[in-house]
Image (cartoon, rainbow, N blue to C red):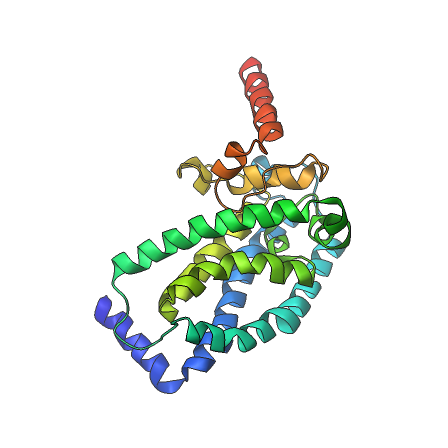
Length: 265
């Protein structure tokens, strides 16, 4: 397996420059993973498939879904791609590399765990700031246009927010100067996590049912359907930041009520 992966990586670095891989390659991987993982929740809403696992009973209109897709393509091409192109020299300076050998699996895993923890911490505070009155009205309210989220709404946001909260995603890699392979894997996992959190569905196989401290769709869906001044649940991935700072009280109260009602039912 390792030799096959090395051979594939050798092909990439032989046929493409590091700049091409780190910019256009990263962009194409992101777009592929994002839309392939995010589109199914649109189909679920339209078809009614898995409706028993849908967190909110209401669904988005086809027009609202299409509006989201069109704006996402525009944002990604006009904001994300240029940022990737411009930021490459900075990442190169910070230690980004693409040469063989690929890093050992222990290095990859430890770095990605560090990225998740740091991203969650930075995102929590940045997200809380975006819920202050002025910033919510002029910036973050765009993301909250969808009170009933679906996978693709995870990256539907004001361009300023894309840059502001995007810092949380890149700060870890910028500090450690990872191999490009590690950076790609981190990006894939982060995209899958945020798409799942915005999916609007809580399945028996959802990660939050198995991973301690993982928030997931049920945790984040609450954030979208409550008035912005009372929403809480600001963290991106885990639940402990909101628990530590008491910004999940409304969510925990609701869950307690639902559990009692479920038992009585």
